[in-house]
Every structure is written in C-alpha cells, then in structure tokens.
Length: 266
Image (tube, rainbow, N blue to C red; front, side, top):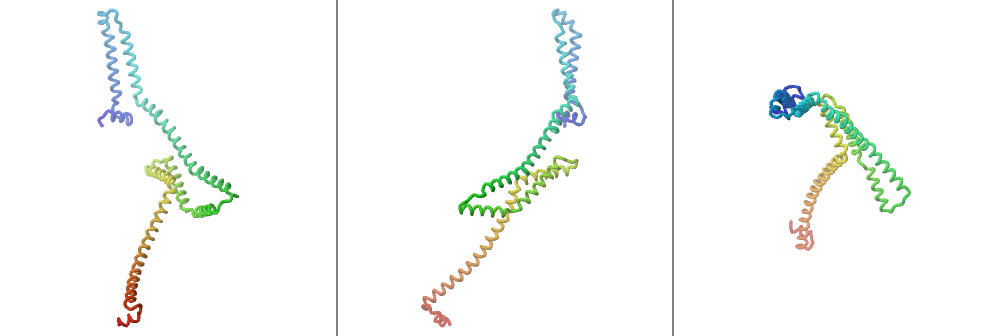
C-alpha cells in the first residue's frame, strides 16, 4: 500500500492522498520557473562576456516547457482522467460492446430456437414430398419401415429436456441482461444463463447419457440373472453327469439290467 500505483489509484478513485504524478509535474514547473528567473536576472552577466548572445531562444524554450507542463497537469487532473475514462471505457463498453453482445446472444437464440427447428421441419417435408410416388426395392422398403418405426419410437424425454433448457436459458438471459442490485439475484442469473447455454448445447447428450446409464443397469441386471441361471444349470449338469456315470456303471456291470442291480444292492 506504500507503492506509487496504490497512491495514484487511491487518489483517482477515492479522492484521498496526493497524486505522485502531479507532485512531479509541480516540481518540474518550479524548476522551469526558477530557470526562467535565473536567466532573466543574470543574462546581463553572460552578455558582458558574449555580446552577441541573446536570451530570447532560451526563454522561448522555457515558456514552451512551462506550457507543456501545464497541459500535462490539466490532463492528469481528476476531471481530465474521468473524461478520458468515460470516452474510452464507459461509452465504448457500456454503449457499444454490451448492446452488441446482447443482440448477438438474442440473434443466436433466435437462430437456434426458431430458425434451426424450422429448417429441420421444412427439410423433412421436402424429403417426404420428393419420396412420394417413387418405388423402392424390398430391402429399401424394409429399411424405410424400420426408420419410420424408429422415428415413431423417438423418446419424448428429448423434447422435455430441450423445453427445460429453453426455459432455463430465457430466465437466465433475462436475469443476466437485466441485473439487480442484489448479489444473490445477479449470481443466480449468471449461473442460470450459463446452465441454459450448456443445456441447449448438450440436452441430447444428457438424455442419451441417462438412457445409456439405464440400459447399462438393465444389462448388469441381466448379467446377474444369467450368472445365477448358469450356476443353477451347472448344478443340474453335475447331477446329470453323476447320474450318467451311475447308469454307465450299471450298464457295464449288469448289462443294463436295473432289476438285477437293485437286487444286488438289497
């Protein structure tokens, strides 16, 4: 906080303390005035030694330096710095960049939410009108039927998530571009705006991820059931193997006569 940059910022922002730049310019102005006085008071001494010498050029240069220092002091005054700030930052950013960015976001939203779905719909209608009245091979007809079934089985969750993404984006954009004094509302608007953009760009991926996770759970459940079934079938196979060995023994020792085997066991 003892640095010149801190003191300069504190002077221009809070109006407290001294401006090190103005102090340096004041010292330079004092030095110029002192030089002017010295030349005016002692020029006769130099003219005695050098009769052809003239103080006009030196005094003109000192006057020019003094005027430049005064202009610099005027420029570095808070009023001058504030006018430059208004021209360079406030007017350029607030009156130029932010409205342009807002229009860009609104146009992108219009293109993404209205024009792109309209293009998809018109393209689908055009392709349907072109394909009407044409004959296809059996394979193509089956492929066309499969595609129709897949289209009919399109998961409505995609529409629901997209509608939620549009709602989040609209609310977030409204709260972001029309901020409030409340920090909570500004933070909420920024987060909703960012979340809406993310959902608009990745809504289908989120639904696909959820469906894939659900199918993976079903696949794991089927694997567990299959493993249990394999274990049960392995037990039955072992029992049948033992029974086959017993029957093979009976066949070898008793020539397939089960009654004789029972009598010998009894």
